[in-house]
Image (tube, rainbow, N blue to C red):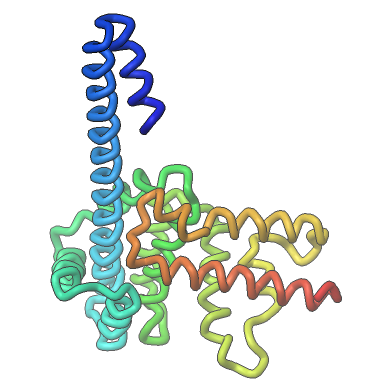
Length: 253
């Protein structure tokens, strides 16, 4: 901000002397504040859109088999708690969920908004998809119709088969983490997106890349709502856990 203000003051001085310096500096300061407000407003708008689309698509996915189960409803409520939504935000989330359940809901258009917002950030779209998979798996089964809608969302987001395999592995790992044996080694490799034949260097490179892409601060700057920071932290924890499991299995731990 100081640099732009100084540049404005310098140009003003060159054009109008001392008075021009004051005017140029003031215009430079005003321009910085304007641009900052615009950028913050754009980011907040993107965050609100991400949250709105998350619950709307969730409603559509859960209704795909013809009904929304109590377990699926409870999963959505648990997500509200995890995101620490205010009463106003909960009301909006409920409205978006119901919007997604309606016959008139345009799933492809909604997913396209998320894809545009995520841009070149695969971690954002993967996080969005992970939330959808968590909700639809809440009742312990994945109906063929639900799977069809999920794959429609996957294609709409531009996710690769490798990306969806990573998400599914994370979900299996999370479900198994409470068991004595924990998540499988195969799932750990899928979480990192590498094969079991990958070299130690390749495993480490994949791990570092995923940790960088999924850093909560980086995702927040791309449109992830602040309320979803905990979800992002859980994802990085799963990535770290998978890496540690592989390292131990290879005798590097």
